[in-house]
Length: 412
Image 1: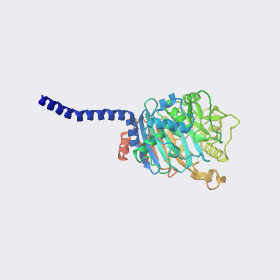
Image 2: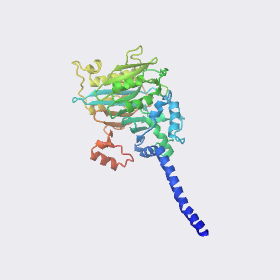
Image 3: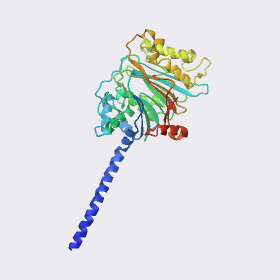
């Protein structure tokens, strides 16, 4: 009997640590199932250069659930949702108020002689930090997008590639895109509109903010028509307390602006968008002189027939002899450092810079990114569909020691 007791005790002593290991393994697996995608994405964050970061997220980032709960009518509600989704208190609410200021942006959509579409965009803002986000959602289209990290409101001490809690909270950038392109060839950019009227549509539809609307379209719209129909299904609400309009294009070359006037959604075909209203409404043309000056300068560059005919040349052919290098040159003409040439009456004291310029090639699935006007001869080429990228590019990416598999290479 005593021997049996000893054997049982010995067996318990052997099995107890095994059971503890198994329990810990189950707990760890459960935690990994719930938080693993967060951790992998957080670890992918990499500094490309001072002030510029890249991140990749593969899997579910909660956007389906966000839409199912009715979306959000303001940025604070988006933050509340993210607190719950990311959990653990890693995502904290913005403690700094983001003020839009009198900054402007420019976008242009053109075709080259072979019919390839290019979409160029300047994001003009105060000198700050930015992030390129590559997402491969569980239910949605793969996309590239860009985020101004100032919009997250985490303060100057926050480091996107710092501690794990800081990296986790950086995942909020997925919900705050300002432009982007998806695998179907849809391209979208957010630009300030021509006055201070905020949009707050109030019907029984689910709610979107300006930035979550961009995330919706990148995830779910394959072309301009689908994008417009999707936007009609939601109530729009301005982000950061400002008036916005969207420049939307696709790989066929169709290009529109979506605006909101007195709560009504308006759509107009145009291949150039700056910061004044373009759709037919009592506000058409409302915006400052600087916006009109940039619009006119881009119009002159690509040709008046193209612009005046709403995207078609004098003979009905929608083609401009403009390869992607020329698109880069076009938007470089209206970057903030060139302001004295296109808006000499602007005066001094303006702290705006072109924080980034980007040329999207929706049919070819890549984009060229240039940061802070530092050098338009250099930049980063971004690719969708890594498996299709040339092995040489992948080798360059490996040498750059990116944690993520997202192909981002330096252009010279």
